[in-house]
Length: 103
Image 1 (cartoon, rainbow, N blue to C red):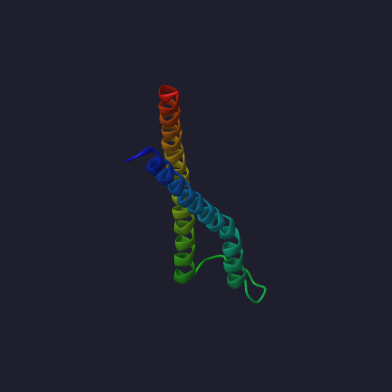
Image 2: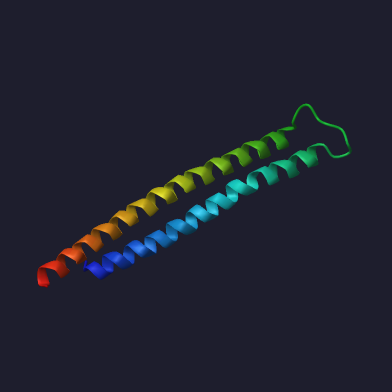
């Protein structure tokens, strides 16, 4: 792979991981809103329910799993971004070395 190919690949990888981090952040930020909406449905009619029905319990587990998945995606995106940044730094150093040796 030539240096320009490495740079392009790193930049594309950084863009994709940035999108992944953004999407995961949005999912995490919306989690309290979804939980509040679910709680409003549980409390419909002005009465609070001390126990959850099996369906409500399943929704709660799914919501927690969704947040967990989003946190994992956030960390993966961060690590992929950092790795691509290192590739970009290495390609930049190689390009600088090539320019220095030819000058």
